[in-house]
Length: 635
Image (cartoon, rainbow, N blue to C red; front, side, top):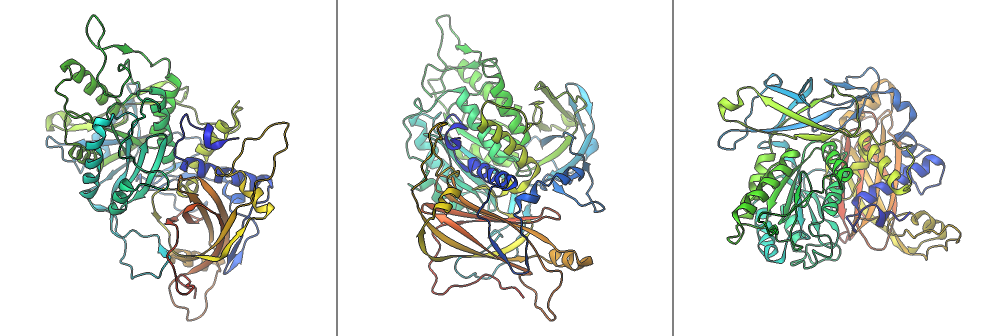
């Protein structure tokens, strides 16, 4: 099963594959396939890995609680505990609708209530089950100030307050001709340099494949450096000349890229604004205009006059459904920024049709399109401002027949016309049935992918361990990472454990025995955790119930491919020493064998009781140390 090549049409970013491989590892552990799981917990080591309990069948008897606010993921609750304002049974389907309300000046309208909104689906009024407002102008998380940390010691706290939703900068160079790229490149840098402090961005580029250039970060200097980087690994080319070779104006390829991005973002809570930077947006929503073969965005003209149309709606119907369903599921809104600028040679009729077409694409997902200007930086600023503050509503459709049909959403706001308000929201979605992991499929990779997407919806750990995912700080911890010894050649057993990773996968032939992989060098890393959480201490002390923590560590290469991972579980002690000082309440040590070529180590800690999670990601190589230091020591 060549997972690195068959999931998507082009050689795309491997972050999705990486987490998919972790999901596969969990399945292997459940089936009894031995894994390289080892952890030394300071208090007590459980004999089973976290995989054996992460998908405990007894979880079907539990409920999933979704707080009113969109910033919190689904969490498992034990019976008898406070489950928040809304309790969902496993068979309840919800449709999230993010609504942006602006006044005549384009400023966000605050202070509206649930009763001000009416939601209909296919003209049938729906009951609003949850309602919240996210104000992107105010910090969403203010971290405490940290002292200077020792080398290679990290805490999952940002350097400055975070604000607003997540933003994906998607630079589509395949659909941007060379004459538009030079200006776009410089204005992208200008936009990053002037971005509001604390806004979190990730950067993807579509050029000879879809690649993650920089994972989510509020460090805009890091993002600037990523744009200028020349490698090694994926980078933003100064000029990309091979758009026609890699699918320029190809609607199918464009839909695949958007589906990949939406699937990558699934499992991460809240709204994500995807800013699509391109000169052409070749995805069908209605009869689609096509060009004469280049990516200029100017439609060809037939002998009778007027643009040439090609109706791709029926041909790509299933791909369209999959893409738009994935964007709805992941709460992705498209913001189209047209890089063509103002072309004096463009026919007025074509220009109007192009702009209307772009508006239709964006509106269908709850976003907006920006065009007709050479000031790309200013258009990107408007996209960020428009999507930073929004109301989140959800409802359970009265039409429970999830047959893949198109559903029209309409949101009306009391007195909106009288006040001059503009209301923007997702206008359409496809009522796709939930992916059934047991459903037979001719393509085993597709079946595993579907099961992985379903797992991400139920278990946030899958999304949080992905390369480039945002830092999570619901549960705080420190981590010191150090190498242990010198690189050693992997044993035959270690190579057998690595052979299913995307970086080492080889095509298997049915009747031909597979030769063992040639050994590679492995560097052992030691991760020393200090979990800083008073709630864990209270939980451990209350009724003698131990707090159960999950630990995950994964190493990735420059291309985002998983190299190796460790998944573990441990219980914290129920008591504490007399006179113990506060600090790292719980301490654990984990080892990870990392092959050559590793560029990142990502780690996660999760409290199983309430799903609170902490994550961080470290760029390799580590800084040199004069002495071997340990992170925050236990009491």
